[in-house]
Length: 421
Image (cartoon, rainbow, N blue to C red; front, side, top):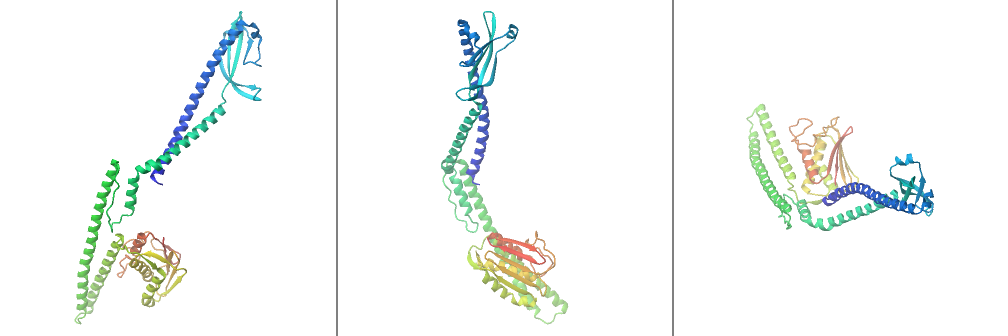
């Protein structure tokens, strides 16, 4: 959710809560004011009726409302002396409405010619249901108006204010450490945005310097290691050509050569892994995975024959993936090599290719591998002097780089599933 929409949603909820609370308070305050106004009118009408009854005694016999809004009933003195004015809500049948309607009634007592009379005066009042309904509609339109106003402000005013921020986000999204183009910041009068631009500039420059220094260090270190390793291997191979060594001495010499060659492979694998993670393979092409897999399988034909492994490639669809060609070769080679190395004689390897996936199934040890550690660096299910433990780690780094989905499962056979996004 975008920042403006996120803010709008919170404002909408806040306004709804505030308006609901305010509407409740306003309703009771308005109702109280209406009752005060009506009661004042009833008091005034009370005085007028009493004055009129003093002038016209025939009104004292009017004991029903009928055509008027008051009635007078004679009551005993003992009842009158303890009576207090009462305001009540009740209902009366209205001839014009053909139904009972709410009214406000005042019950009071007055004395005339030594006799006590109870006076009841009624007046129409607003129906609470109608009042609540009208208030609800009014508040609903007010709420909708406020929301529309917020949306308009967000899309025109606030979006313009936040424009430098969003442009900075777009620039950062396209920024690459391996190709650090200068960032152009939009001029702004907002101090916070100015501070953000300055901070981002310093942070990016620091990262670029660190990345460049690290890349040069890795390349130099790898080169410096590779040269003495190659010289040492060459000299040991020349030394092995002499025939004046015993079997024990030749075994020690062969062990030293194997360790140096393993160290050479390890150095190359770590350098490759570092280059992948530093995104140094920027050139991308459309790779036909069907053709690539067929070629790599053919390259492994001798090793497959030596290990008595049966391999089957099921090309269900043509698979075209856009990625770096060298990394595609490394990824597929490591996957197939892993299926060969971790297999047993007379085993099998099945490769299935679809438009968006690659599945490699192979026989091997009859138990599942550790899924949590399988793609970690230097993980080995079984100790091996020939394996560096970086093959699947390199594959995982490549799939992460291109956001492919790599997974492993076991169902009486080992399954590597690669989905191309």
